Length: 264
Image (cartoon, rainbow, N blue to C red; front, top):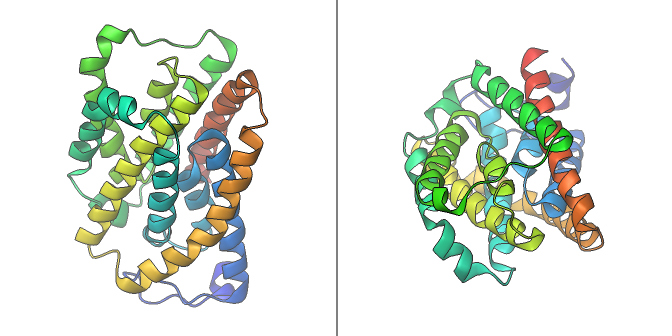
């Protein structure tokens, strides 16, 4: 009822709402918070923003709004570090796997509202995060990367178009590679950029990303970028040990959010 009073939406198939001022302010705050999360731990922006914005908009509308901030912030995260070439040489099979897994398209994202897959993802994230906080971290042997990386990429791409969530199994896999903090952040940027581009193409193919939606998505970059800068500023002043725990806690929070959102 409250959301109906705050704005009048266009026909259901349109991903562009007719916003009122309270909706714009709410969306800007959600985007800034999501950008802060991403700036600090390197991921979580689409999950955080989508979870908050879908209180007012549909999942397809939220996904369309996040296209430009996702792509732009991940370009910055992927190319701002100093390890681009080595990371590309190491992770190109996983990046190709993300593209291959995204090929089914965004039909699930734009038409399926059951929420079952998202709930399962949330449970898996919670279990992994709890294990990371209470036990020694998982390790992936170097000799297993050549066959495991493309599988992780394909699963991440497929689950992203199924649920709009880019975190599983990408986040747990990269955290199990014993990467340095800056390497982890840049590897996440490369992976999430690939996934965001694939999702954008899939949404466009489903006619869920018209020009007006791109305009709103471009405007969404301002609060998201401000939050990203604040998160990066804090990360640079945080010890690696605190960062590792914050990464696990953030995965736990994202998982709990996904589960609760689909159960209430």
